[in-house]
Image 1: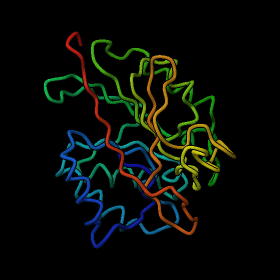
Image 2: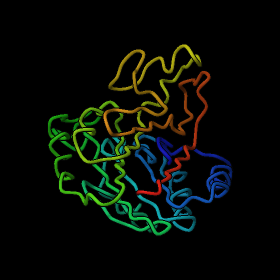
Image 3: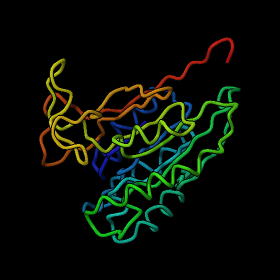
Image 4: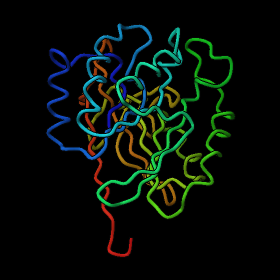
Length: 236
């Protein structure tokens, strides 16, 4: 699971990040938005994206920064050109290690409303978009890729077993065992869903602290590549 690269760089041609991704021998690569930034050159993001599909099947959902760019549609077409599936309020049922999985993806809330730059979108329209997934197959494990973790209660109203999110950047500053995050967009001070694993009803949400490294300092909050293990039981 990768999130919030924001067109950042990890070594020449993204060699450092790609090494750690390959080392995990992933079955799937799931990208949860803001891999491309709206203010920075896309070159570093492209260096990563063009190499991912050779490692494992890849699925991508938008973040707010893709929709804050001048041409989000061009970004999505570019990503698809690298053999990566961009899920825009859509889903695919696939087989991994002889197990059926349904991978869902929902456009960031910034896709709704007036689409003004720096606007976070229409939450009501976003919640309505999630209703499309109410007819999902009920005989396999279902994963939702979404950028915004603070909508956890809305996700739990739908038939998702696991939701993967980013956006919060780990709350920027952390004090382990005392404060999981200082501030996050759309959650404010001391965000509840800054990074880690959360259980809400029958659904689990995992929030990545992201890969962004920019002018904002990260304290006790290193960029992270999240590895998610999903294990079944004998009875399914």
